[in-house]
Length: 244
Ligand SMILES: NC(=O)c1ccc[n+]([C@@H]2O[C@H](COP(=O)([O-])OP(=O)(O)OC[C@H]3O[C@@H](n4cnc5c(N)ncnc54)[C@H](OP(=O)(O)O)[C@@H]3O)[C@@H](O)[C@H]2O)c1
Image 1 (tube, helix red, strand yellow):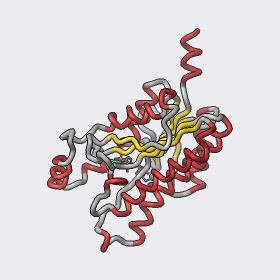
Image 2 (cartoon, protein in one colour):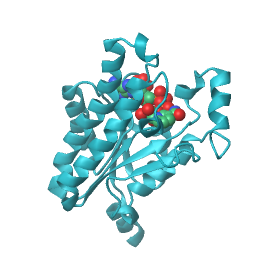
Image 3 (cartoon, rainbow, N blue to C red):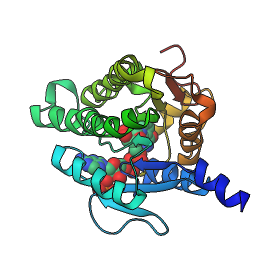
C-alpha cells in the first residue's frame, strides 16, 4: 500500500519531443525506467515499444498545442517535465547556406523549443512546479564550421532558458540547457570518418558518448535534487567544450 502511494506521488508527467529515436528515446526510457509517466512525440509511424506517443510537428504551434492536449489526456494532468529534444542539422558552409537551410534549423531547434516551453509553462505555472530541459549542443557555445545555422539555434536555447528562468523561476519552475558533445546516434553516424577522427582528437575523454549518458544528466536536472539549478548550461561532452 505505502509503495503504491509513494510511486503515485513521485511519478511525474514527462513529455519528450523527438523521443522516438536517438537521444530523445534514451531520455524517455530513462524517465520511464525510473517510474515516471512518459509520453514521447513523434512525427510518423508508431511510438517505440513500451512508450506512449503523440504526433507533433514542432515547427507548427497548432501541432504543438494538439500534442500537449493529447499528452495531458494520457497523463490525466499537465506536463510537469518538458524535455525539448527535437532537432535537425542542415550543415553547409556559410557562403553556400541558403535562407531555407538557415530558417528551417532555427524554426525546428530554437522556435520549436520555444513553442513547447510556452505551451508547457501554462500548466507548470498553475501547478507552481515544473522542469524545462532544452537539449542544446556543445557547438552552440563552441562554434563549428559548416554549422552556422545549427550553432546559432543551439546558442539561442541558452537565452531562452535563462529568460524563462528569470520570468517564472519564482514559481517552482526551472529551465536548463543540457549541451551534449558527440553522441553515437543517427545524427553523427552520417559524419565522414576523417571528420570523426578529428573530433575525437579534441575530446579529452577520447570517445563519443552514449545517448544514455545524456539521459542520466537530463534526469538529474529534472529531479527534486536539482531544484536550485536554473538557467544553467550543463555540458555532457567529455570535456570538448571546456570553458565555453
Ligand atoms: N547526436 C549528437 O551527437 C548530438 C550532439 C549534441 C546535441 N544533439 C541534439 O540532441 C537532440 C537529439 O539528437 P539525436 O542525435 O538523437 O537526433 P536524431 O536521431 O536525428 O533524432 C532527432 C529527433 O528529432 C525529431 N524531429 C526533427 N525535426 C522535428 C520536427 N520538425 N518536429 C518534431 N520532431 C522533429 C525527429 O523526429 P523524426 O524521427 O520524425 O525525424 C527525431 O525524433 C537534437 O536536438 C540534437 O541537436 C545531438
